[in-house]
Length: 155
Image (cartoon, rainbow, N blue to C red):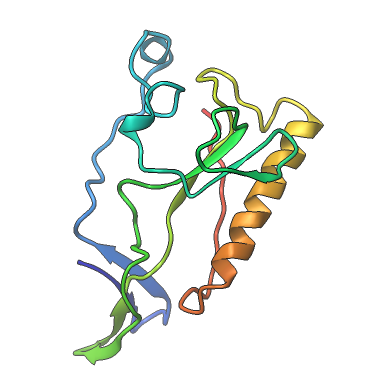
């Protein structure tokens, strides 16, 4: 079950998700350098969900089936929030609750496993920013969504 609960003390909304497995391990540098199967690398497309959008090296949207993509956006296969459903708000005991509706997407910024493009040069930064802006504009069309958060992780 995925839901949002309003903390009665702080009045902040908190995500409660008992369907997500939060046990994960960040590999040590020596483990990361060993060959393995990366679901984001070219040739392993069957390991990830179908793309939501693809972009070229200029950050312009291209066909989802394009083989020469520069940036690809996919839904997270273990989302914190789910895009399906309607917001149903109700009170239960101390809590004000509603369904945990939202989008959880991953922006893959390169076809190369070891190449972090966002920090490489100005052109890659601009392309990634334009792709992110396009995704934000698309998500803004969903009236159920009130807040958008984007973050990057550099290992």
